[in-house]
Amino acid sequence: MAEVLVYVDHVDGAVRKPTLELLTLARRLGEPVAVALGAGAEATAPALAEHGAVKVLTADAPELTDYLVVPKVDALQAAYDAVSPAAVLVPSSAEGKEIAARLALRIGGGIITDAVDLEAGDEGPVATQSAFAASYSTKSRVSKGTPVITVKPNSTAVETAPVAGTVEALTVSFSAQATGTKVTARTPREATGRPELTEAAIVVSGGRGVNGAENFSVIEGLADSLGAAVGASRAAVDAGWYPHSNQVGQTGKSVSPQLYIASGISGAIQHRAGMQTSKTIVAINKDAEAPIFDLVDYGVVGDLFEVVPQLTEEIKTRKG
Image (cartoon, rainbow, N blue to C red; front, side, top):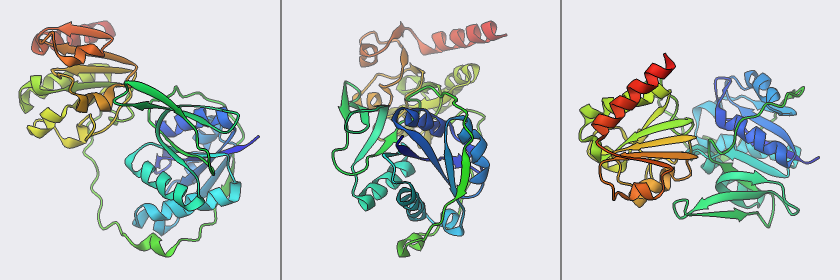
């Protein structure tokens, strides 16, 4: 059976959920071979084997920590040369897409970004993508070279498939470009206790209708009752009510959770482009003609300051 390379996104050995999703998808195409780089790489092996990685290639070197993307591309290319895979899968983060693009150029393969599903085809993997703010779905395959595919988080349910999962050290020769851009400082992200926006199963977002930074506590209260991430529309971010890191939309982050709750968001195309692939969409808006209602599964016409607190209390009651 053909082998499929999976680039591992982890933090000091703790494997992040998008990687486990990639392993689930990779098993449709062949035998997953995981590539874990940097500090804690070897510690990822048990979780990766639990989710079907037949082999885990690991590498750790100062270049992988102290410099930007190129050393990781060098390492992934070394894994590619060692395995000759049928496909390479990478999480669809900003860094992941840069790694994928650079690798595809080096190996002479084609690239597909932001896939939301994968299936095996007679002539190679077939990827499903959302187009025109998720108004259409397209199916694509790479016609030349090895496909390099980035997959959006929450595209599939994580499934375990335990295997032995051998661990092998990966020998990497770093290129001259590897040390061209050095990381001079790192600032830890302030902990909120909430899940990462792009990985969350539930996202609660607020928009212009929240009418002030001080009122986002209403949105946060609902999010915390659901164990959800907090998002914001571009209008709310531009007004300074919430950080840009939480912006959902074409110029922010793309999310695809199981449940997306939009409160006080009109539904402009810019916002829709970042959340329209959500599995279930709920909107709360006092304007019955708001465009957001054109794409929702459930809509509530009402004042968010009345609806959201009642919803939060009802959730707490049912959970308690």
